[in-house]
Length: 346
Image (cartoon, rainbow, N blue to C red; front, side):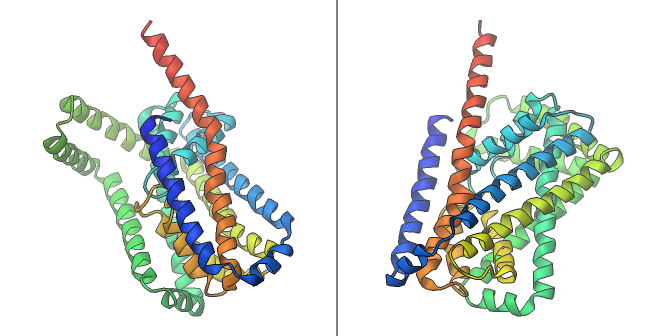
């Protein structure tokens, strides 16, 4: 991790700690101590283990999707890149900022850049489709809960709408670019030239040639997914569903650990909303945004004296634990790259 990334990690953690402190200040009261005395630590441990299991599902998704394209990537390597990805996602806007790490590590495992990019982008597309489908399901079949949650929090309905529009546009752009790779090339080249006019990119022509080459590789890899990689897409969907369901159940386990009902339906709806909001590139690692949105929604059916503690535990598992788990794999990757660079300059 370089100095700039360390700076943003500290900013992300600092912002999260500040918001959590404010939430706790306004929610902790004399009854909070009584709730804490009845905490069942087994549920808290189970929630942490379930989060680790969800990362295993993510690793298996990458392994199976890569394997369907003809590349054998060890599970240990997939797990390592997922953990390193979680650390990078904590210092980039939204929690969807670790894609370059996953692409790079797949490349290091022998997967060409175009194929690695196809795997990683297909992951994000599957996430968008599944979250969108779950969101539609919640609107159509959980209408009363949905209306109660979205009308109870000022401005969240608008933010959710913006998030869904962004995901829908991304999926539509992806589908169109699959059928029209030349359009994707023109869009990327236009973006590169626009950046060049403002920041004067070095070796612009080399970059444009690389865009041509990698878009062709990417299109070929996607064609292979549709043709020979259908098994990978199937497993991608299966492990994506398992990943998101595991992540959503964590909140209910924490509520049970705090002596509350699991509120499965309500928590399911809230988790969909929060997951979509956290994909918006608003703050590093979605710090602050996640805490505020979760507090706002869960305060509708969780006692105010304990909602702050619940959000604290929730972020400890889904954010701070990611940083801890990602430190060692991140350091291993940095050490490997430094040694490889030193060997090249001998």
